[in-house]
Length: 410
Image (tube, rainbow, N blue to C red; front, side):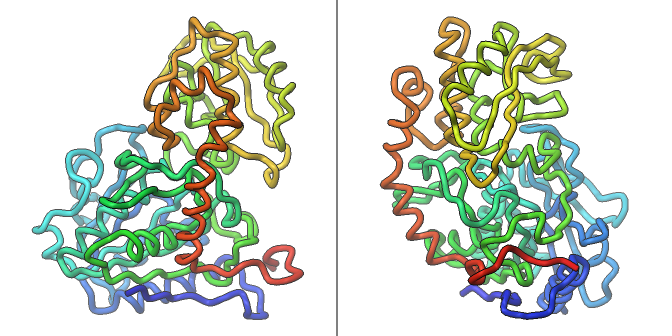
């Protein structure tokens, strides 16, 4: 069963960001009254004034906050990608912090025994291989098995709720894309859903047994709204996701994690930069711009990563400049950039099977060398249409009102 706490966009009175989030928090507190609460969160779990909702819950006499659970990058967001996250005691609240990234992906029976409900409050970025929603799914399963409830404090999708792109994964890739037994496909790379909608889909379509799920929805949010139009605060959800521009490029440019090229980690523009010491950025930018990809231009760039791939070395490459977000297709773009890099430098450029796992496309690391990007994209369209059907059954937010140009914030 799914309970939904939300206010639809039919209300005529415009709300400020403060009143919107405060209304969500009030609904959350009502749902948690008299219950022992575990909170799965990170630094993105803030109100409109950038105060941690965790602190508000801890100070609220109506809520008994018992423990925190930490995803990838840790409770405080200070761990690099893949970095170890350990159990410890939070020095501010004195509550235990249990890691869910590493050997343990879900709460233990002993941890759950102290709780009645677990709350998920993390800003997702809308790409399937961002690990937070899959950590959420493991916790949902553990709660279902133990008879505990699960609540999602929902937040807007930075990529929007209308565009759906990329291959639904057809194999289990763990925390970058789960696949349940008997399930033919997972989420599209850019799924166009909030975390609350993903939780609803997972619970309704794939989980057995089901969890008692409540989504505390974003008030007056509809599918035509941009992240900026909601007025919700942006706090970087991981160390290499500093800006909304990063999130826009990320669903496609993350493919470079499956190569020997730098994806810009260790610079101030991760996932917007890509390159390597052997690349002539001027040549690469010229060849990419000649493709005429919609909504994007490529600028020759040189950068020196301070850590990760090619740390301390000068790299030539490109920067992705999104000129029209409504036309920009990040997945198509990322694949073209990697393929062009291989085409120009076949002896130096390595593409690994991690690219296939990230993008959910079997053998992609070899197919990119011999097939066109458009042929590869055509190959996943049937699964993408099937995913759209499943997705449509589990959406919580309405389409944009007729004639609407977005939400007005006073």
